[in-house]
Amino acid sequence: MSQTVTSTVKHSIISDFKEITKIRLSVSVVFSSLAGYLLGVETVNYTTLLLLAFGGYFMVGASNAFNQIIA
Figure 1 (cartoon, rainbow, N blue to C red):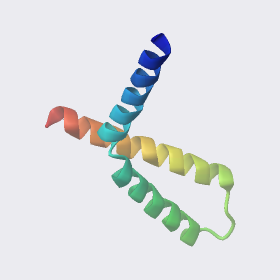
Figure 2 (tube, one colour):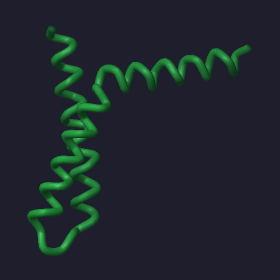
Figure 3 (spheres, one colour):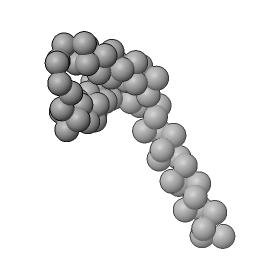
Figure 4 (spheres, rainbow, N blue to C red):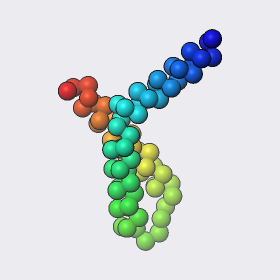
């Protein structure tokens, strides 16, 4: 019984996170920023690329969440 409840709660939290951060919009913005980075550099720094991906996703997700809260 408790395992089902825990599974449902985890699914609910993940679902809520996806909804509030608008995952499809966030991924498209991150994709375009990664493409811009790759077009603009001569040698790729994978640490910077990874930080850009995570930081960009979290910034876009935070702004989407903030817009939903103030709306």
